[in-house]
Image (cartoon, rainbow, N blue to C red; front, side, top):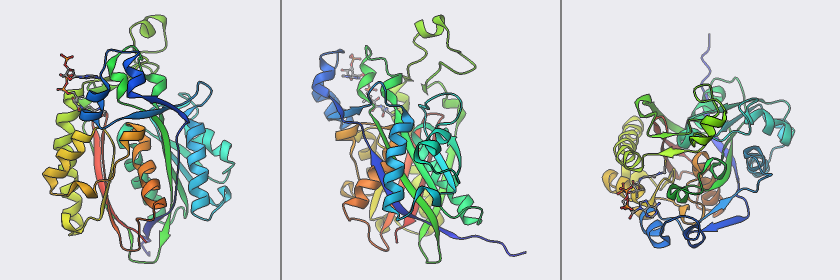
Length: 330
Ligand SMILES: CC(C)(COP(=O)(O)OP(=O)(O)OC[C@H]1O[C@@H](n2cnc3c(N)ncnc32)[C@H](O)[C@@H]1OP(=O)(O)O)[C@@H](O)C(=O)NCCC(=O)NCCS
């Protein structure tokens, strides 16, 4: 029997962020924080906030449609939709099913993938397996989150996140290009260091659990920082080893956007000049599942990606989850 393994590449990108902006200066008026501290330590100046009537699927659908258009396809051509999100519209059905309906991509099988800030990386890896084995040809992978809906706006941790969605269309290619390596990792011992405890089966929606603040995200910032600067270099060095490439071969790093300090420290550890590290957290903060695909879309539409450009993706998030990937653009 012939084993079918095909190369997988990205042929379209899209993104969407809500119009409402919360600046650092605005946050100073609602919680005890400091605009300069936020900018200096996290690299954030402002973030986008979804309207009450905007659900994650609304942002995801906008981004998805733009990616499909950018790929020169129509929703009918999509056979698989994966939505990476930690802020689904509902516990059931999946946000991906709702997106499928909103963009009218009725031929696509659709499901969500939960890996929080690593969600888009995990999802492009998952979609790539379906395409590489010939099960599907065209997949729409979306990273979308609305953390504003699960943020305690009376706690200074409200400065970290923003809302947004990004998407990519993946397909197969005969050329020597596309994803060269993926490495994904999970360490569930980190489950209390970043969590959204409420609304599931452990702490169901109840007056007591809402009063306890369990519907909001909880974060141990120190643990996130220490973990990130340990595991990101580990994953990146592993994909470099897998591909036989050196750090000097990387044209652009398109990473998750936790904080500017984490990215600067990681770049230093792996020996990558910081000019090669793409960021947009000054405008959008951490959009969780949305960070990598929004940034990829910006870099793509800025015309920076040429045939042969080598991109390094890397992410770390709740779980812990983390990983890295290298792709050759074409
Ligand atoms: C957030 C981070 C910069 C805090 O650094 P830290 O030294 O661990 O911070 P601490 O919580 O001990 O706070 C130290 C000081 O920083 C300042 N600070 C911390 N959080 C602040 C905030 N939200 N606004 C303003 N100042 C803040 C305060 O001056 C604080 O002193 P205080 O506690 O006496 O008021 C660091 O932990 C970090 O970068 N973590 C990664 C978090 C992250 O990326 N999260 C998103 C992805 S999941």
